[in-house]
Image 1 (cartoon, rainbow, N blue to C red):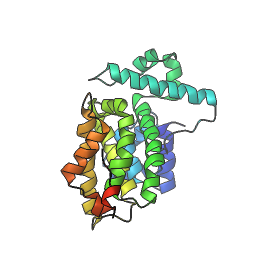
Image 2: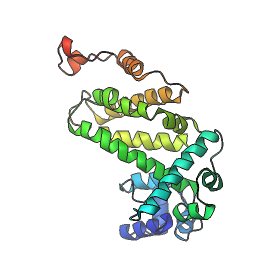
Image 3: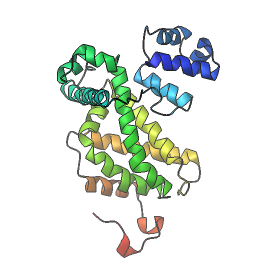
Image 4: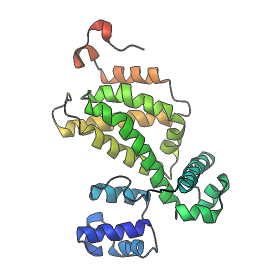
Length: 255
């Protein structure tokens, strides 16, 4: 099932006309019509906007494959897309380029992905699953938001610094990536109950600051070591973990 079909089903389930959905998404109804008739496809940013607007699961537009061979081919295409971005700093790679980096034909690639936007969205969905697995449990354990960021999230990001550098620096994908990662972190961390801020607005500001730290850090071609980055955050934010977490002096984190 292609994206346009899923948009049609979603619209019908919500009882919306094409015009009503278009109004809610701040676009023209002709655009919704084109999607549903397979005459065009929403951009990655628009897919993210639809997911946010209607509170959909992030993988709503991804068809789960039961065929192992199909899954392997899709993974190969995703890896080839990443490789093609390394080779293309300024212009979005085409499906032709992605096919060249894989052992698949262009026809095979198009059987799984109709556009580069679809590949981009699936790549983000893969990242989303890893964030949920590695960060959600820390949120549920009622850790402080800064502790989660410094000691749980930062190591996860540092392990993926090579691909994240690409996502943060390629002009054709960085805006969609930043929008995605900001919303996902906010949704995860705003579910956190025991925090040292008084309002959700305060927390929203804090999260934006932390995301800015990530962006500056991972945009560097050779990011500073993890321990140096963690110490930098502690120093710049002025965190006193002995007070924040009630730790004794001999039980504080040091690098």
